[in-house]
View 1: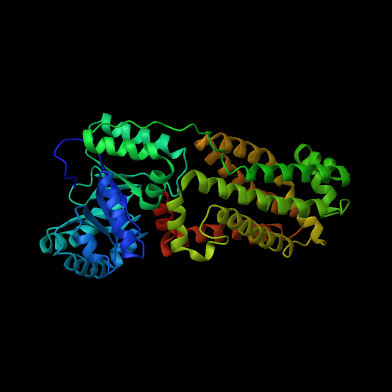
View 2: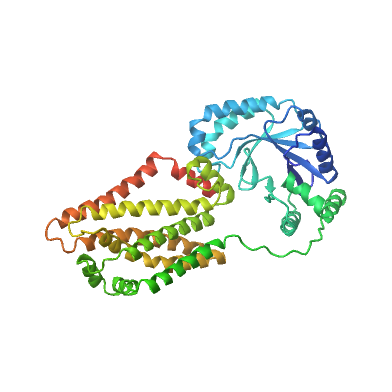
Length: 460
């Protein structure tokens, strides 16, 4: 894909063409003057720009708009995809400087069955067209003929910041040191802004174009801080809420101690209605939902890239509560936990003959959630420090285990003084809950695309 005969990196631009033809021509002239050899444009190319592009000196890559396809999407729509790709290849057959056509972006190309599923499509295209066909995955371009190694890399910065130049210099210097002939692509908006705001970048590009030597003076920049510290503020607010609760609800502290250190006495107090207040339990269930939102947010940050988040919500748009961003996962977790807790309380209370007041059910159920403070404090600490991904996963599983364990323990506690019907109550609560959970997982695994969607999002 690279026109150079010696092993050295080349420059490419992912071009977002302006509407004005004169401005577009000026941009192309600037790219050429600064040593850019490749352009990638999203299909379709505007008719007014088509002659400008196809008669330029650049090697052009045209990428289709097919993206975020799971392996099932590809399998189910194989014939349609093949026909669309054949039409695409036919449209650009006569353009000699179009060297490659991108078929898929951010799709399930890393799946074990992808090559087997997609090979008939590639075979049809290869017999029809002499163009190269490629796909884009994880900030790199891969040729379908030899997908073992990428032929281009993406400098993935959306808007120019002076701190970007240090990363760029490190990446490009590494490619030169490795004597790589890979392409390094930039977004056109970032590239144009960088050469305008930092003239030394222009000088370095011209020098590399003329004598193949790369030297980029770096500006003095300060490291930027993470914008994820809002979760620390939420955690701090939840700790303050606990302190206020203990101070102004004097029965909370002894209830916590009895729940964990003298659980039998705690249950007796609840069942005999000696502890009548449900305020602390309600607050704790609300905070448990906030903790659930934090857990899902942190897990999404650990497992999903920004494009992975985009792929996830592309398939499940109704879940994008605050838009296509990580913050939506916080609200998903919060809402799911609130809804599940409400159903759990109903499930525990109505079959129980020993629970005459809803406050009893709330207190039996919510006591275990005080452990959330320890789990989430450690999770947030590890996450903000950028370490302990494996431990974060373990702590997330522990949060879920305590959540489900609280329900089962509350069911056993509620049935403790049932003289008759205890077995039936446990069957209706613990047994039916376990069966329903099992079948829910089976349904998700066998009858929905959720696992594939999540696998696709993680792979990006």
